Image (cartoon, rainbow, N blue to C red; front, side, top):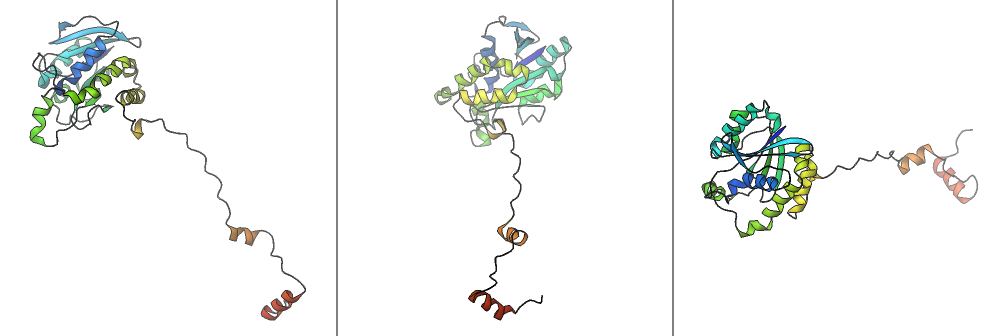
Length: 242
């Protein structure tokens, strides 16, 4: 069983915020066939379903971002799971809008929701970070993350969320590079070099001998024995002893 936790703040006031892209991602997955309606449990909204043959619990903590780990930790302990059974989806300031990255464990990067998950669940869970871009200066960060996505964001946001929901089985199966490729293509960007399939390296060709080496080790030079050229060479170098 897997717990997929989307991070955000509850209530209509925050529903369109950049900080709530984790909630938006889970809403997109939950709308796909096979998931139950949202219900209240574990200080959260939960929906049960199945992806790639595995039982999946979608969870949107209703404790506010800073206490997200309370809800996720309670669900993890109820089902007797470990951090390896958790996938967290959340916003990332240090990624360009529409970019996505996934990894297991790591630091919190100043994200209060991740700090809370680390405290309540341990650190060894998978993290899908969805880029919202950085406003450029630290003093603008709070208004940026708690501000709503704007019209320019509509060029990539719906496409990213739909692609994530359409390919959620890849997330469950751990097909991370394939998923990153799907998300990149959905928003019209090229996959990064580390997301592209690596070509099989070709065996190096044997080093060729230089023309000097070939001359030294190959055929003997064709020196004339008679004639004007032979006479000139004899004068220059003298005749060799026989």
